Length: 250
Image (tube, rainbow, N blue to C red; front, top):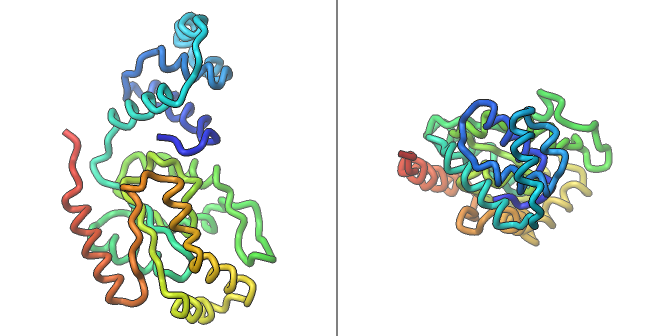
């Protein structure tokens, strides 16, 4: 369920919130498994929980991927969303915001433009003159979105995807555009030559598609052509149909 161990602390915080809100019923032995991976976790639990988990974790055993995946699966299954979350990603200029806006209008899901959110909420570490953009603070972005993503019903629009928790998304859309068309679009945006070349090269080598496949289960990742308005309309129709048939948990 987790793609990187760097997200472990966020999972621990999420589990603590779940326990304090009495949303989940997870065996303490799994807490012990987590605590063996990060001993500080025990110290952040309440006194009662700590007493029992310390007792359980006193028996030495090896933390492994299967135990961690079990915890994640139990939590996800206990708190299923009533509406799906969709990530729309791709190289700048592939039409992410245009399609996300249209899809949000068609489905009444919430459109979250991460780039705009970063500027609005100052979720960055300053401006990069060379790259001509803000330096995204991934932890601040994830913390800002945590609660709303757990609720479900979101379309997240951003040109990166490998730092989001895997559990957030039910579908990952990677928009792809012909290189010539993309070059013209980015030129009209006023991108400098270096930034323009970097983005076109990313599209040529399908960097975002590979990033998505490495970060999420392949059955969740779908590449969609996005050269013109006809492509966008077709993609919106396809995704609207999928969302309308998305299973509602019992």
